[in-house]
View 1 (cartoon, helix red, strand yellow):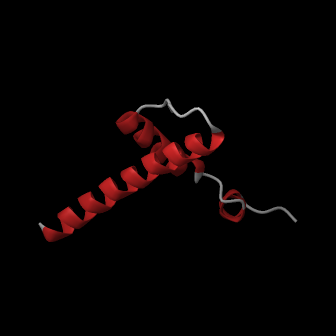
View 2 (cartoon, rainbow, N blue to C red; view 1 turned 90 degrees about the vertical axis):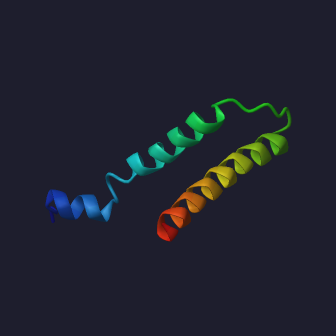
View 3 (cartoon, helix red, strand yellow; view 1 turned 90 degrees about the horizontal axis):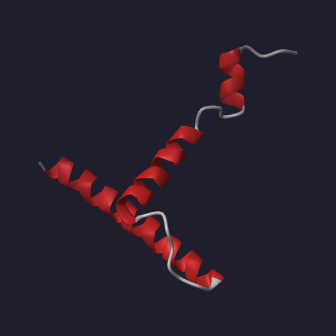
Length: 68
């Protein structure tokens, strides 16, 4: 049974990658794309800190917009 394009796209969640790529691009733009830690645990921790900081900045901006 063939699905139409829209049903197929919804089923396989086609087109969602651009949203994730946009977030990664924003994080790299704000903090740079290099990590300075040398151990694997340090690399993961540094990457998680960058994502956490980006998320905090976005949340702060959204709350500031709501308060204005």
